[in-house]
Image (cartoon, rainbow, N blue to C red; front, side):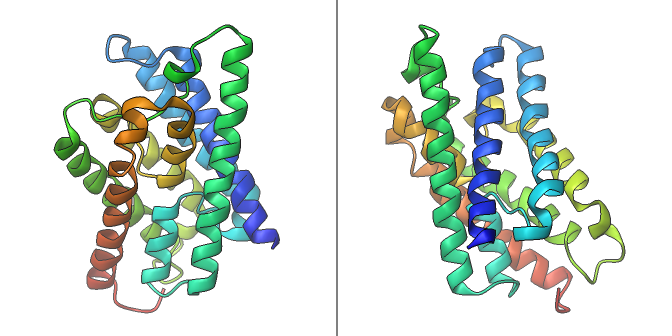
Length: 224
């Protein structure tokens, strides 16, 4: 149970700090500094959690990563399912707290939760989320592999930095999800397009995670 709770806490921190930064900085295409700041917030949150709960649960804090680990034989189906459940709960709790902060500050909760939306249509959004999630999960699988030299000693840093890069590319198109839990939480409070397009941010990351697992098996078939 401790590792499941660790995933809940980690996903809470990622969602609250990442989406919270997007809200606080007013992240938009018209403000380059806000994009960079939001990207860094998500990446640094992952680094912080990697060194906080990595030894407890592996610090997936992302159902797409959990799927990739399951498909590459690193965890059981039971743990896979439980990780996803607790990650989603953590993200919903984080979104609820963020919505409370926004509402008590007199803001519009529906517009200020860091929710994802496809700026250029669902087809574009789906492609972006599949590709970016694939690249991100591939980094995770490689950086944490026990048979990939000493790279796993710096896995948290590598993963966090890669997430910053992913956000710098994806924010313009989808607000960047690459994480179903991170999208589900805010969408429940934002409603509108964020909720009607939520399937994109569930299907896309899961497809990308599965694709990454397949690629990893091809380029590194040894047990990892």
